Image (tube, rainbow, N blue to C red; front, side, top):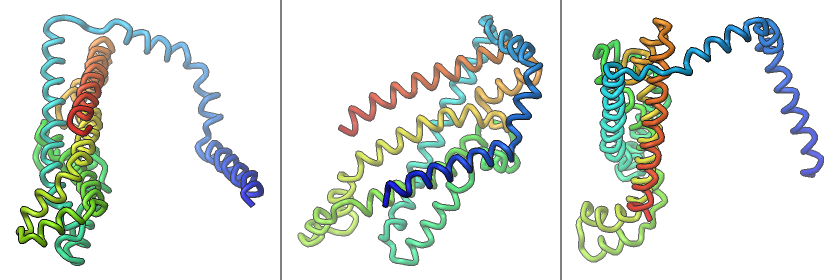
Length: 254
C-alpha cells in the first residue's frame, strides 16, 4: 500500500512545485533579470572592501553591544514571564487557568517579532527598548509553551512523594519537579537566545536599534563598504554567541 502511495505523493509534490513556479512567474522573472547580471555583480563587488576606519568601527562596536544587550534582556524577560505562565499552562491552576495561560502563550508567539517590533516602536518610540519588548513578548510565548510541555512530561513521582511526606506544594515543586525539568529549560533558553541574537539585528530595520539600524542606514545611503562592515559584525556576533551557547549547554545541561 505504501509503494502505491509513493508515486502519488511524488506526483502531487511535483504538481505543487510546478503550480508554484507558474503562479509566482519565476521563469519570467529570471529571464527578465538576466540582463542585469553585470549590475548585480558590480553591486556585490562594492561589498568586498569593508570600511575599517577607527571611527566607524567604534560605531559598529556600540551597535554590537546594543544588539547583544537587546537579545539578552529580551530573553531574560521571556524566561521569567514564560516560566510563570508555564505553571498554569501545564494544568497546575485548573482547567480554566490552563486554557487562559495557553491562549496567552499562543497569542504571544503567533505574532512575529517584526510585527511586535513595529507595534512597540509605535507605542514606545524608536530605540532598543522597543526591540527588547518585541523579543520579550514573542519569546515569552515560545518558551512558556516549551516550559509547560516539559512540566507536563516530568515524572510526578518525586513531587508526589514529597507531598505525601508532608511537604507543602511549593517546596514539593521546587525540590521534586523543577530539578527534573531544569536541564530542558536551560537548553530551551540558550537556544532561543541564539535565535534572538539574529532577530535583534533584524529588528533594527523597523527602528528597534542595534546593528540592524546601522545596516538599514548604510544601505539606504548606498554605503556598501559600511554595510559590509556591519554584516561582518553580525556574522562574528552570531558565531561567538553560538559557540558560547554550546559551551554553556554542555556544562549546565549534561
